[in-house]
Image (cartoon, rainbow, N blue to C red):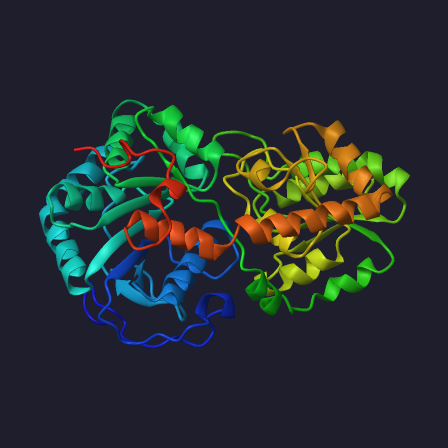
Length: 437
């Protein structure tokens, strides 16, 4: 590793998934577009990682700016040039040791701001885009306010991040207001998330840039084989993909697998060939497995565990219906993938789901926690497969028309003054969040 903040200087490493690494790296004097995540980017198909990986690819395809990725952990493969941070920035907020964390932050602040200034100048960084903002986003806000960074600062909100911020109190709430107001633009991936941002601070005027899908790349990389598919022959597959985790500070499952199991109790009798596939892993997996056993459905519910991203398309193609029973989402990548696979969709009305799914037109859209509606909607897809297929085709057409990563990237570049896309087509109004002084 070359020093605390230096580019890797290497070409694309082997093992970068084609959907991220289709364009070879090359030396360039272009201005930099720096993407920042609070964790190492792993090519897992998980929501925020998927967003950043695809935006990186599209910035490279656009070819006017050089995408860069902030990394404090050396991984074997990354989709673009790396800005190494061998000494991670200090997080100023710490629940366990709040005073100690803040003091450490303040002591090291002058040196860290100098280091960041050197990074900005050396790599000619014009845009900094922080996704799922950690508390260390404050460094970039301060850098901007002190005029040590003259480019565009974008903060992208994805769902759980604003949910956590909304629960903050007193000092933390003031801190996050300072951070979010310090960005040139706040970006959310759905209109509903934009409402949550405004609920936190009515002066903020977030820009909505929805997540997208590259259908061609999705098809090219959806060639993996799954050994358990043999068990699904001559069955009607009801599929959900998602982690078995709780919503923050609650006891309920975020992805609603418990709701789907309850719905399947009714469906199992009416559809003897139906099989429920709950793919994913997480700390609450055993809890759901026990629910299935208690309901006497062990032979009808399959838990395949983690499904590699290159196999998701294969699995979706085998399903008669894809179900997202979530209680909370930002803009679920899973329904975009289901749309790309032309699989009929049943989803709860959470996050940006309603921006893609119109009930009885492009899928079935139901209220959160409504087991009766969930049961009826799945039943409708199984009883009326022709109508379900028609809705899936409509959804696919809407996906191609309005939800692509190229569109999303152009809107991001527009915020930095780099695109032919009109700013009025992107933002819902400029103001605070838009940066305030």
